[in-house]
Image (cartoon, rainbow, N blue to C red):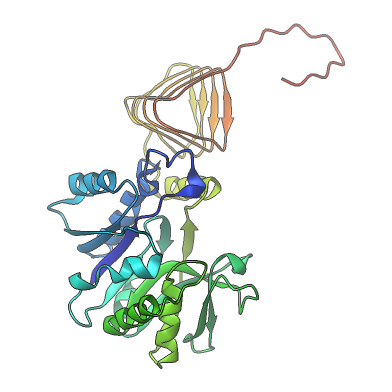
Length: 329
């Protein structure tokens, strides 16, 4: 079974970080987001990958080749223009043999599932999870037997609160490509793009059985808040050791701190991931990501994402206050 990983998007919601850095390569919990996704799939036994590249594609390609070449099969296709997820999947059709099953996963989404259940499934499956704002997602209407009855992309009046989470196991691959080809030929779009949700709905209407798979957790790392949440979840799972001792510094796990970092008179953690060569002095850092070779001095940072090679410096204060004083700094 091949894995199709679309990673062509420009990551508009994560700017300014994605002006020069592709979203799948933003580092969290010790490695790029895409690295966590691929490593999870490799551990689950997958070894053939097709990546759909687009925005800053050469950086993504270099990372994948330098990290995984020789360990797994790598194939690349380029999506330009970027016309939606269904279009991205359609570009991989020449790499799929007949009705060879495929697993489609998004390159900015962390999903935890029961892989034994996935591999044992004899039907196509789509990952679902309950959400508070279903109008922001592709939505599934699921029967009592777990079979998908209807799929709609970002409906104004949602059928349910069961969102598609970017996990699709497709066993009727030929039917999927035929459905996508119909959308493209007849210019059937939703929200300005060719949607995989619409192609799957055509399969449902044709009587092809597709069943829901409830995921154990799902993190759509499209925005800053979700990236920080993903960092928290991964750090708790991975529990990296803190090896060096830093002078006059308190480390509150879980954190990821490379040995090349320099920390002095600071409090770091919990839920902090640092890049290589980061220097922190006289600061408190919590629930944050700080890119490689950045310097932080005299600051309190919470829920922050700092790009690499940045320099942040606050001001020290010396106060001599009497009773009943109320100040804000």
